[in-house]
Image 1 (cartoon, rainbow, N blue to C red):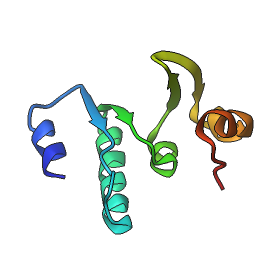
Image 2 (tube, helix red, strand yellow):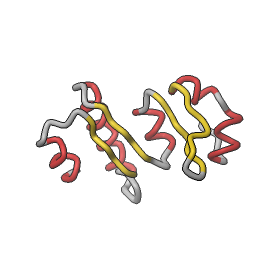
Image 3 (cartoon, rainbow, N blue to C red):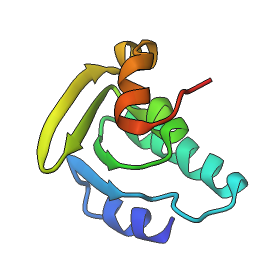
Image 4 (tube, one colour):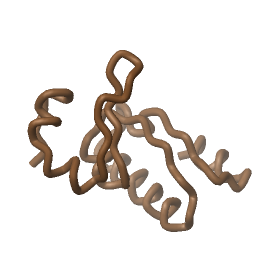
Amino acid sequence: MLAIGRALMNDPKLLMLDEPVEGLAPVIVEEIVAQLKTIKAAGVAILLVEQNLEVCTQLADRHYIIEQGAVVYSAANTAFLADEAIKDRYLGVGLV
């Protein structure tokens, strides 16, 4: 939260985050997601690299899957959520 706050002090147009919820307790994850939704609603673009799919689907407008340095999949959030084959193939999970 402190790192995000410090980054916001510079009034960025783009906030780049690399796994901001890794290893955090679920209650803290919920708070960070809520704050990121507020930041997004304020018009700050967010580039999020995250392995937690629940967090990704709550925040993302688009999803990109990168394999060996190349983008192998790109879709809007709604299309990604509906594409079970892609989630199973590249991520090995199904979202409920």
